[in-house]
Image (cartoon, rainbow, N blue to C red; front, side, top):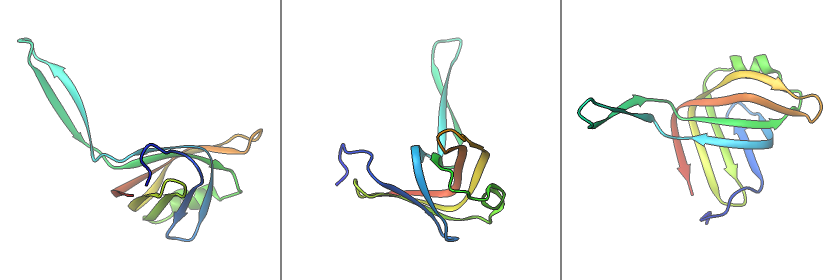
Length: 123
């Protein structure tokens, strides 16, 4: 269904009961590793594989959410649903990272992200 379509309404919900209203962007970093390259003195290239956790970076509306509650919450499941494209992102055993930054001119809350043990994309 999604194909080459992007955007539209996107909902973020936590299994602890909160709903966030996205304001700006959402970036999904779903891989469980990152790769780097090094070149040996004989010209051959080697790959360095580093395990990594799935993540997401979000910008949403500052609706008065208690930042300390969000950052101190136990691990829980976070679901991101792209209503227009039919794509769902499941972050399992997730927690919030970063240092919240609230822009008081436009109401954007940024500098927060999700880190999870597991990530799955549906659709």
